[in-house]
Amino acid sequence: MNNPEELQHFLDILLKESNFTKAAQELYISQPYLTQLIKRIEKALGVKIIERDKPPYTLTPAGLVYYHYLESVAYDKHQLQRNLASYIHPGKQIIRIGILESLGTYLLPEILPAFLKTNPEVKIQLVEALPRESEKRLLNGDIDCYLGQTPEAIDSSLDVVVSGGEKYYVVISPASPYYQERKFILQPDELKLKEVLQEPLVLSAPGSAIRHQVDGLFQRLKLQANIVMESKSVITATNLAVHGIGLTISSASIIKRIAQTPINLLPLDDNIINLTFFLATRRQEKLSSALKNLIKIFKNKDLKPQIN
Image (cartoon, rainbow, N blue to C red):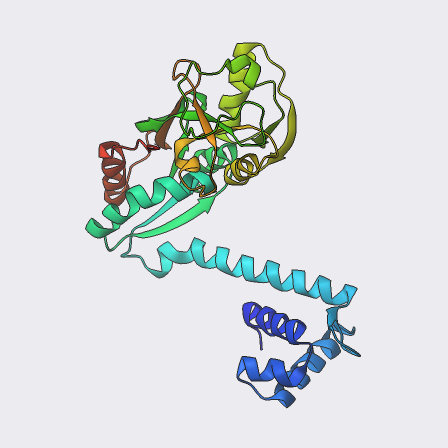
């Protein structure tokens, strides 16, 4: 067996069941086949990969190296397939979109269904990364377009189309002394912003568009942020704030996904912090008809997530 994903799956089930017979039943294969497969792998590698003298079964140190090897082989295989897609399907247009994962959860469902309905022959490849990495990939030609926020901060050699934007809020949980019962969205002047922002904060890690905006807000207000925790995920940072770890500053599209209540939301003035969605492409690049259609749909969309 040479399929890395299938080998990983076999190992996962065997480690979970800690029993060859039960694992084989779940995998719909025979127990002798599974036993011999593991023995053949260990013989080929020259080391034992699973401690199986007694449950629970575990990977040996060598087995962990082998498991990570299977992960890397599977990843490289998928990357190769992605890179060869345009050659394997020469008649099919492919659009490689760079986007931050947390932003993609809002933007992509807003634009891709309408686009794919009118462009069923197009294949979309998502390349999820932090904004600077997406920008670098676009400049290098590794992706075809980049969906992001705050177009003012990207390379001036890129062509940019903007569409809508969204509002920022300070997220205040009941654990905060600033929390007000039986209220949801506060009036902008209901609390003194400079006082509220001196509370402990949970923020997205440096590199995200939201963090870039938040850092600029603190500089503008001449405040030193009291950051108690950071996360690469804006959604995680918002959820942690909702559950009382600290206050956070988040956007409407993120807050809409948070089911936990009660919380207060303090709206922030668009003049001091704002977010605009954009789609960037390489300047002087001949755009495919499919990419032109995607840009048109993006530009005509009213991308303004609202919290009621």
